[in-house]
Length: 404
Image 1 (cartoon, rainbow, N blue to C red):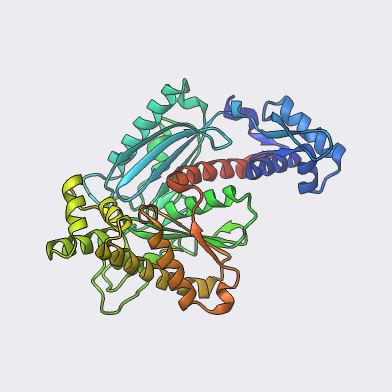
Image 2 (cartoon, rainbow, N blue to C red):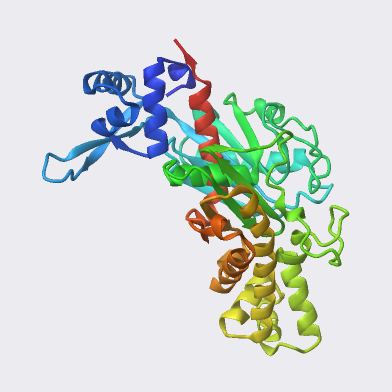
């Protein structure tokens, strides 16, 4: 279905589509109740949307002792979304339905810190992969409704351009929209990679949680902030750059130029560096064994040694979790979220890191800030970035439709 077929929506139609998108699926009764409309008015809008091919019936679900309720959702025939999640050392490209089901997915290594792999090179690879994935699903560029992109740096959301990104030489003020315009006529939306993870989590929660943080601990450490049900980007797009909060004034120098940043002391490179130093000193036979088995002493090897009960590996992960928790305690005291969701490569290697983070947060935060605080893993896992990029694209498409 071409994009032009839904370029103009009545106000009531847009509200119903937004409600269905954020709830994933809903019955006619639920829509009327949620929008505080009469049943007859709501049903008339739903009928119009079904007739236009914008909404589809998705099967019945039990409804207590009454008749089963017919569930509704945004039509999969509307088109597809492209989601691109660019990290410091990897990139994921996916084709999704308007309901965020992943139809095709590709992951590959990139290094945006390398000036030789500038924006034109990385985005050309993303474009090629996107076109390949579309073809695999029998789709064309014209079937794309919108494109959502997450990048590891501060973003001017209105212009879809990065602003002085510290990790990405050559990306500042590069027009991502202009680069993709020749291949796709669909609108392009760009945001910080942590913001898209946070907005993905918001949809996963059906917008039932209004104030929370999503923390990613990987090559770097970043944070997405949801405040009163909306992404908080800050005055210049750099909100959530918690990786450069100081946790030790005598700590090592960070790539940002300061010393003692939590990113320099607790992110994946720091964990791997501490493990390599311990192995060189002969402190851990388990680390040496796993390094020989895998051919490299990486985070997976540290995690494997930790799960075997290796004291050195456990101490390294506990130190990382404690420092991340120390940083989070300051943020929790300031923001008072109800939830903190952890994501990234480190949180996938075992429960020890999460336990250390929790212990540090609860010890260092004020009692009132932690009375109803939940610190847990993100439910989206490895697909958080891709899902969030899709949510970003669909949300902005729904918001930008002209109302008649």
